[in-house]
Image (cartoon, rainbow, N blue to C red; front, side, top):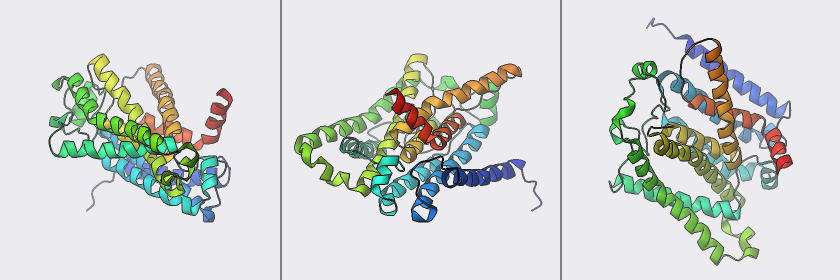
Length: 325
């Protein structure tokens, strides 16, 4: 059709290809991650899951940088891939190695019961949304709890104009945060309830042989728990920011982005990644001050970089944690 092709397509494809190669070399040649099996002995599954997540993050970050939105379908794809791989991973890799080296998320009896209950609560919350018994937050702009796309948290006027972003003053953000808390209540209640019930009916000595500790089920529940922790840490900041500052502190796209990350890297590493991300934000702010420019960018790319760092330097991060605690 002779239409011009933007250089961004070449840049993104080149970056993705280099990422594929670089991650492969770091895992299988440089041995930056202990315990990763050979490629043909289950290592390919570990590698596949990580490049799926990183590819999703590259795509989401590129869109977020331009439009200040994160398509939730990208996050959901990576999340579902994590659930599947964490489940079947126990059949491709020795479950003992998975637990020892944290190759895939895996749940203990405690976190497994919490994850199972939270999953039931999520279903209940979504049913309440679909039946209209719960009202979606930011419903008029399409930034809801089930789908749609992210809304920028702190877009400046220029960015808002370019991306056709609704102005900040259109909503009572504290009221919208209350709606999100109501959405989260069934998840929290069911999670805690499942934990209390199982600990009451299952004796301590039989917990390790309980069905949720089967390697495949523990893998699925571990990934689900990582998903909820990843979502929860961002959502907590989002709600706190709404009450404290009367504005939308972080978008729901960021919530789903970190949920996908947690489903892949597990609950501990996704929390660490969340606290690594601000350092990239500070570096960006410092460069803006140095060059005397003012251009705000969304937080999604910083979160993606934080996740990438903890994925690649997993062993170093875990050794520091072990040293400190």
